[in-house]
Image (cartoon, rainbow, N blue to C red; front, side, top):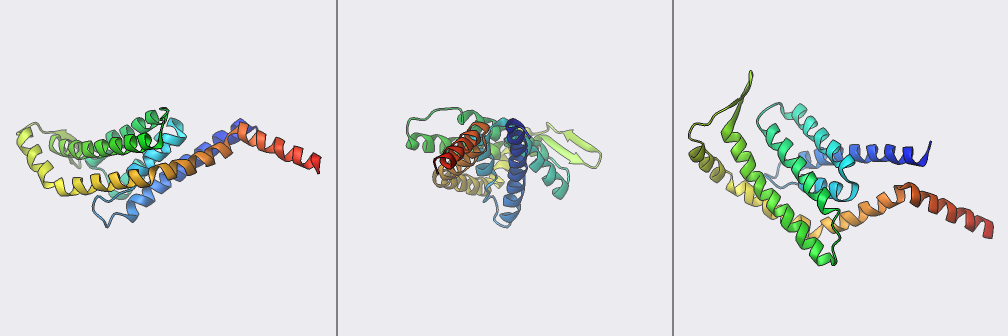
Length: 206
């Protein structure tokens, strides 16, 4: 098998692995309301591995969650939010940061803002869109008032999620990025070729 083909196959495996990690991480922490690692895992995957890995992983995660929990308005929120998180961190992964401090601050602020928007998005979707066995429907009646009630009722959960991600991203994001970057480097065709060349040279010298 050609190195490029092997590399592409490896990326598919990484995408599947991340989908499993996201599903497993979410379900493992389901007993702790809004304490989650989904944002962190998607962010690391997008930041290091890129669009071809993260977007399939995100949407497989959503499909598996739908199989577990059934269809409801949360699917709309998930499709918008988690794909947007992937997009943002994929783009951030293309930025060259001069210092680690700047990188940590940037990704932590980004994660905090995105998590804050998640509360707004889910509240808005749940207010505007409903679901019955016959499908989705839209309800514009007293939107502002119902949104205020919906959002305020979930504030404690939203705050927990924001604090959780602020701590996780400030402490765990860069170590995970470093670990994933090393794995990706070892998998790239050029790196593997260089390793094989070095091994051959060492064998000749012996």
